[in-house]
Image 1 (cartoon, rainbow, N blue to C red):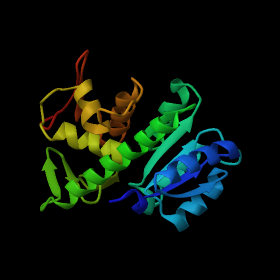
Image 2 (tube, rainbow, N blue to C red):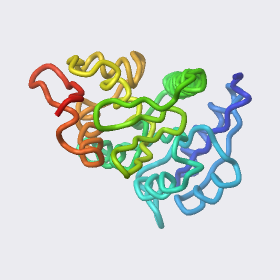
Image 3 (cartoon, rainbow, N blue to C red):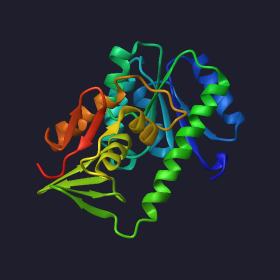
Image 4 (cartoon, rainbow, N blue to C red):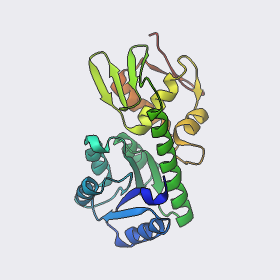
Length: 234
């Protein structure tokens, strides 16, 4: 896909930030729409159907965390890329953002070249993931007590079905691709977020915790000082 095929929605209550982001992203050929708060952002998203949403965290009326939560509850936005843009510290914003289903995290201030590089890397990786999923003949794979549907981003455990955010799903697919094998933190970062994406040290831990909350504590085992492994026989 060309840059002009991608739609990007920018949501921020500061007009100068919106102007800066919009100008630099449009200059690269992307389609761009903007919104001034979370409530407006959701309405614009419904009409615009973006491939990527960049959300400010601190906004009046409805902040970025709540906006992301509400978007993820809507089936049409379950696998849309959502990235937070914020100057707040990792201890609150990043962890709360990933809990809400965010895919990435961009800290203010950000240089135009870095911004564009991050946007292109996220879209390229998402496009590659979708292409891979579409080329799989049998999209339903049984691994131990769960089944993974790679086409619908669903996990089935017994009679329950879980629709996972993109990064949680990709992390689960990576770990379950080789049960019992220990994946190092570096391997997980590179395999799920990509070598050119910079995320905080606690990102993996947050995603693992979210998976355990949904699927149970005994499927993913922590190997202290090394990483994680998927356990398919416990």
